[in-house]
Image (tube, rainbow, N blue to C red):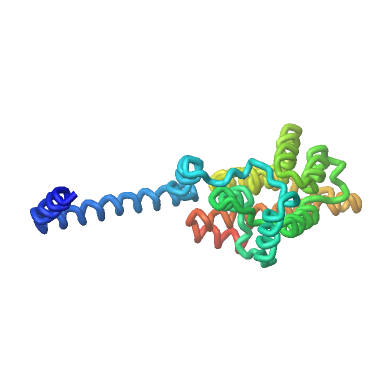
Length: 255
């Protein structure tokens, strides 16, 4: 033991200041390269490369929380107490950034193992979706009839599946919206889906604009198509903002 310590001390004493300068310079260079790559990756894909690697590969190896395993908090007192404690920590708050449920909320769940949204939040979102994206004339379009049920569905996978079913019938703007909000895992993917939604939404808006004076049902349909188009443009502006295209986002918000 003493021999090892003496050998180590002799080795450290033989190191010159040039070694420490070279060590500091090398570590600074590596850190700078990592920082530049991380900045480039975030600018291009809208997400952190280190975070993705940590969530996808390192967290399972370190024994992260498995969100797929169901838990029954009503059967064990300890789990019930922790559930009540987590509920007491929640605070209903206006969300000015309007985060994306798939690309941002789910990423938070992957990293922390905690659900950021309560049932109250989900109910508020469901009410807003039904107000903005549905109307009494949905039965006139088969895809809209499917989406009317999808917005009321509580199960996320069932909503996503219904959106894909609607897209098999026709280009449905609200189906693209649901997939962009809930299925897309990155901001880039969400933006691509919103652009498809914009193309479909503009076509529906032009058609309903010509028919809006033919009855109350067509008027309600045009009002819904207007809400959908405004929502899509606002979300596209939010995507541009999150991807660093601030001027483009400001221009879209003004429009």
